[in-house]
Length: 207
Image (cartoon, rainbow, N blue to C red; front, side, top):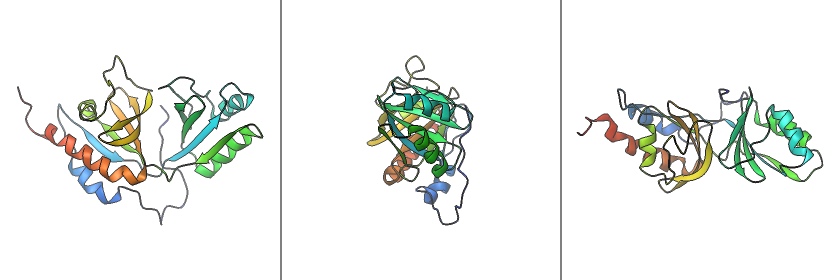
């Protein structure tokens, strides 16, 4: 998987939605056989894309991204710089290592005059990363999805809820590592919910 990092650009005045919880998330880290860790990956480039998947514009956009747009629920596609997550029959979230304005401009050029839309939504969400052997068990406390590997695995991403919070949930790898994309206004609640859900794994395992 292409490693998605904070996009380049001025960051002096930016403050992530969870900067105030950085210490609490670090302190909640559990090590050992039931390890689990929660971190924020702020300021990732995210672009919402809508286009007819059967159109020539979709083909042009796929060439621009370096990989075709995923066509089925839960699927993702990726290239060296971009990852596209399926949101609906004609909607995707494009994650990128490049700067949001540049990605948006390239996608609009590929869309040309065909029906569709390209919107930089990087400020709309933040990214939480939950990793470690106990990560799935933590999510299962409040996610209605079947997260067992037979049903949900690396490379899959779906819209769901964790606790009461709507999120886009993406399993990045089999470690397992998950990325959760909540709206920025809900991020504080979700982070605190996850910290609480992680707490039991720091104690001895019950027989």
